[in-house]
Amino acid sequence: MSGDRMRALVFRRYGGPEVLESTDVEPPVAGDGQILVRVRAVGLNPYDLHFLHGDPYVARPMMGLGLRKPRRPVILGSDVAGVVEAVGPNVTGFRAGDEVFGTVGLGGLADLVAVSAGAVAPKPTNIGFEQAAALPMAALTALQGLRDVGGLRSGQRVIVNGAAGGVGSFAVQLAKALGASAVTGVCSAASSEMVRSLGADEVIDYEREDFTKQGRGYDLLIDTAGNRSLRSLCRALEPSGTLVLVGAGGGRVLGPIAQILGARLQSRFLGPRVLTMVAQTKAEDLLLIKNLVEEGKLRPVMDRSYPLAQAADALRHLETRHAHGKVVVAMSAAGAKA
Ligand SMILES: NC(=O)c1ccc[n+]([C@@H]2O[C@H](COP(=O)([O-])OP(=O)(O)OC[C@H]3O[C@@H](n4cnc5c(N)ncnc54)[C@H](OP(=O)(O)O)[C@@H]3O)[C@@H](O)[C@H]2O)c1
Image (cartoon, rainbow, N blue to C red; front, side, top):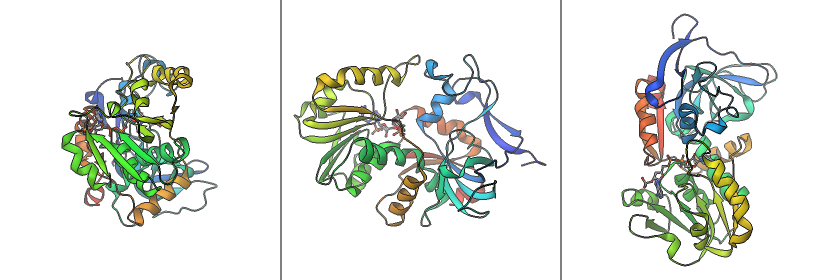
């Protein structure tokens, strides 16, 4: 940081990771109900790629960005872990020096970010900043997808399509923690050992076997891969089962919107319940995740950590859609050691 400016990774036009630019900007201040966090590490998500790519196009206005190009330089990065630098008015429960993790939407890939106090929680004490930054969005999505949307009950059989990814690697562990009697993970052969190590009772290599052609048997299917038709996904479920669509394919124009609308239209004809979801940032769920990590029931799987100078490479790796676990950017020497 030079003078009263801070480092930030911004983009001024939509595109691939090559449009990212490292620059100095005005640091934010903690507004009403906000805390200012000194960022130590940032966990990357496909969510960040949507902003960077500006896709789907129809969502640009909803994302608060310009239609042809962003109206202002945008600082990328949603999932952060760091140390509270200052607290704004009307904030209780946090003070300078506290270690926190949470999800901020935009602004994370910078030395400092101002975030609503309700979007962070104390960092688990038994892991470092990089691991903590890997948690928020993916673990919240897995938790809410299984528990709130999927209504997972003890003794049910769960299958996770995309089990090696950010969301999937948490979904496998959380399904067990929430009482599933058996958890199946669908992933490539290269990820199967990792998925087993997370507690999956069975692993299906999607390059060799089609899990949708093995007959029914699952009560809950969490689909993060978004690469199969609703009809085929429903074939894997009991008639009373539930399909939760977490990730959706779709083109650059409509993106997941087409699949969400399709799900709403088709669900009444498919037998199993078909539900879509958008993860919610809830401090109480971040706290639950912290507790599960501290109890040893949940751990982030780290694909790789990159220094800030290589954040574009980190995003390129995420773009392959074959990251195993989470991709993280370390913001400082302290973050890199964590
Ligand atoms: N609805 C929501 O609120 C919400 C929230 C968060 C994320 N999402 C969405 O959920 C999706 C997943 O997010 P993520 O963070 O888990 O992404 P990610 O970490 O980038 O997922 C990568 C994983 O996908 C797996 N994969 C790729 N092709 C596959 C296939 N054909 N079958 C099964 N697995 C496959 C890869 O495993 P292998 O290398 O083993 O193939 C890799 O481990 C994204 O579309 C994201 O936008 C939605």
